[in-house]
Length: 116
Image 1 (cartoon, rainbow, N blue to C red):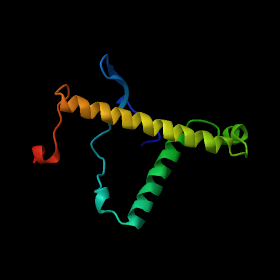
Image 2 (image 1 turned 180 degrees about the vertical axis):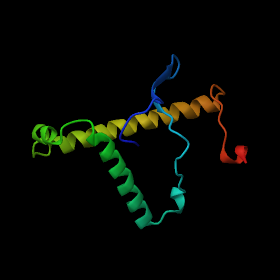
Image 3 (image 1 turned 30 degrees about the vertical axis):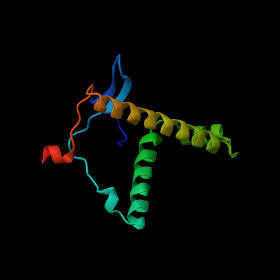
């Protein structure tokens, strides 16, 4: 996640699979083997991701205006939770659709073993 957009940011889509939000950054990304993380590693990684996400979104508006709009009730928190659940459902549906496309040969896929 980055705080400023770049020229590689945009939408792509196909009639069969719909629209997708895509981003390709310079190939300077780090990679982690999450399955090897301990509990503390996972917490620190989640905190770093949250910080990067918050920093990117902080440029989206005036913090005081947003605070005034959100207020102090739990309504906003509840809305975020509902959105997160709905977004997770969409991701799961996309994953299921992609797996079906790979199974039927409509989409080619390769594993790390194929690349080695």
